[in-house]
Amino acid sequence: MNLSDKTPEELTWSDLGNHAYYHWQHMRSHLTDNFNILCKEATEKVFNALSQEQKDKLLKEKINYDLREKNHYGKMSQLLIDMGHKEIVEKIGSKPKDFTAPISSKLYPSWKLDLETGEYEPPIPNPRDGKKYNWNEVTQQWVETEKWGEQTTLSHDEKLSYNQKRKERLEICSICEYNKKNWCSECGCNISLKTAAPWMSCPINKWESMWSEDEKRKYHVN
Image (cartoon, rainbow, N blue to C red; front, side, top):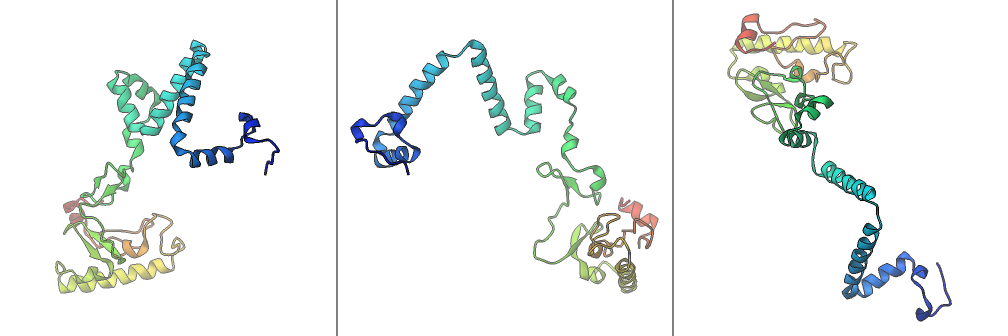
């Protein structure tokens, strides 16, 4: 509290605190234009009192602030290029590829770079229903992980072979020193998903791909 014995007529502007100002603004909202007028008049006087050097500095700071707030790196680079200053962009050195995931993170040949996220995304979004899915590059579909061996594209023998090999993979990974709560610390993959993909192989050769080299070449899987 900041109590005063002064009457309203005796008050000076420096006597008023923030609360008094906001109370005045709230109670007399039809008079708030007076504050805008006062600020404009003060701005004019302050600006005229500045040297040209100070004016230039303020203007540059305002332009810099606006550019930073309203643009990202790509837009700023393109702005400079459009203005004929490509050499500045090249001198700084960052390239568009620096803002996207590396090509090595592209899991499958059909996945393409999303220019919004900078990540490689599948042609069909991963279902968001709480179940685990794995991408089938052959059929270009998401397949529920636990049902991979039930796909109609597999023969009976292939299903049996797949289910057995996946079980063996999971058993190996379950006791592996790189298994960190169902994530492989060696390759960074989710173990449940990776062991379900027949074309995948262990990064430290504890289990091999279920696919032959011909199958890998056919579907462009590394």
